[in-house]
Length: 605
Ligand code: AGP
Image 1: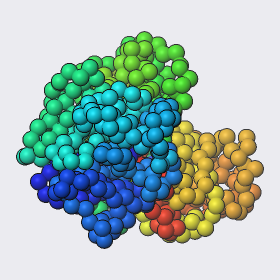
Image 2: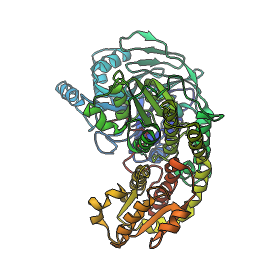
Image 3: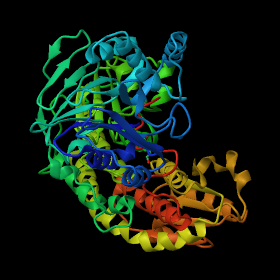
Image 4: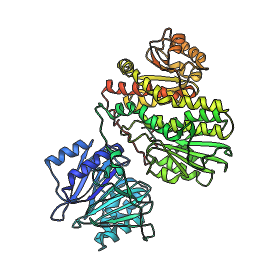
């Protein structure tokens, strides 16, 4: 969840490190730090608690010179967000930045304390610097010392080492956490992702698990876990696709919500061409007996919506599971089933571990992934890109709706392969799906009304979201978005489940957002809404004009959605959920793009 960067460059490196860290800040923003080697060969560091801007300010007052450096942006796991716990960790002649968790750090720390190396921080990472310093003190070379350290580490890590007096050397290692090498002209870079490297180079290779790399300005040698030198392919990245700006919007979230009609159009055009579903070879559902969709957070909720589609359209039993529960439950999996792993980042530790658990047990693993170079994209049998483009805001919006679009295509393909739809029915569903980008565009016009309502919502402590059928997971997503962006407690419930408990919570202090297009289940949801209003609950009804006409009497407010989209309406109804959360956060003055305690890429369990 932390971001790391390392540069052996030709220019003053501190500003470059900060520039790269800006691009990695989505991975964590509890503290940041850099270390450089100055012209005299001395290793020096600066660290600051909180957002990267605090480190930048510090570097203005206490600059660091040098053309070699490493940097880090932290999402705290072991130890509070303090300067002592901030990276780089430096002991003796080595400084280290780390993303991941060193699981055996307590044991190593105890062992080192016996030899007089005493920890100065609460982190797991410091032990890596201590161990390497102890190896250097025994007379080992930097490479020998780093290798001896790597041999002792258990857990997940991406690491970069910089050594005092060694201005043309950096060592990097990867086990479980992503790490890219950037190849420049007489410059070398390492970083947690290609986006961080994109200001400096478009030529990138990726370390594989167990690899370590020895970098100088003019060379990189990569070794596998058996210390055999290996080649890792160098790819040219599209630097234009890594441009990160708010495009005139106040927040990335606002931009990313507004991008949805365009990116949904792109992804649907990619998978549906000339009225045909176009998927990679091997995506034939005819012999599949069950699907298991595994993901976390918002991606899990995309999978939850898709469960309704797979079961209803394709008659295909579908389990959907939170990755952190799935992997430890050790569920039996049929060798005629497929596992579908949904992830924006493609690096989520639990989803990746669930994928590794399922591999070899299911007939096929399919990734629905936004970051095409990610571990989940690489490790699944078939990776289907969601093509949402870079999503910067920690709270997911366009990645969610693009995940839904890909899953909708898969559900239709499954229905087709299994002979569950006539040609006419398939054509009608394809039309519904292709109408989604335009309908999402219309749904964007709810922004102003959502902004208005959010001023009111922001005054409450608790909010309930209700939905039925495939709109139930949309209600869950509405609650999740509100929680993570505005810090207001929110719950999503299946409308029909209300009277089995949560109705006890209802009074005038608990607004209830009801997500209910005028569909076959609408009457039932209206009855649930009446039950809420009879208990002085204040309802925001999110429906189309027909639904609002029929069921809107007595509600506090309504949000008018476009009609259409058929069974794929959940994609359209995601928009007001996003806007309600966004504007409530703006009204409350929270940090919309980087909400407290969160990180975009959750690479620890
Ligand atoms: C989304 O708003 C969340 N911040 C979070 O739930 C996210 O969806 C989850 O961590 C999964 O991430 P992934 O899609 O990158 O795997």
